[in-house]
Length: 210
Image (cartoon, rainbow, N blue to C red; front, side, top):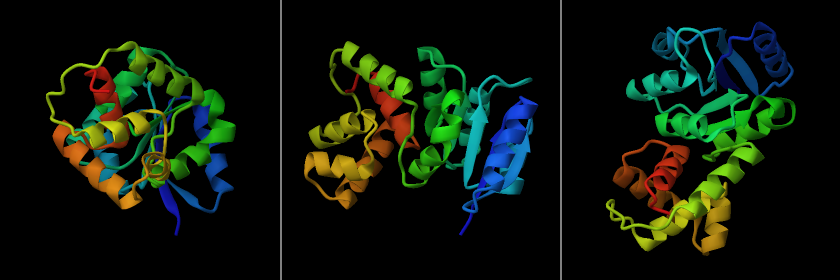
């Protein structure tokens, strides 16, 4: 079964390059490729993609705002940010808006399909430098009282996820089953009022919950 991909990139050459990459991989099919996000909700409704790839620096409306509109419209489709930006503001703005992962464009040739597979398995792929920055940010902030009433186990799972671990690795690290991990994650989503793993981790770090 093929996975449909919708992507937004204003650089014509890069957009064509992405189309070429997907054309030689039988696991994926391009649902659409656009140079702006001004009709983002209409595209989501019409094309119903399995995964969205989103540039940040777009004309008319940026990719972060586009992600926010997708989530506000009720879509839970995994969204992978593709960008040259690797600063704190763009990373956390994108993830807090609802992005599922964050990949620097320089890693596209070697990491794109790996990242997409990770997205489909429930992971939150990030370029190494981005993951390192998130972890460093986490350790710079002291623990504070938890207003969301997360249990110790839920906090442990969030901390493990913040290191970039998959559900399987979290289960191994904490000596619990993957089903137990999923149950705790569902509870975390409800308590934090988020819709993705990346959003949960970003909120936990931003509000000093871990």
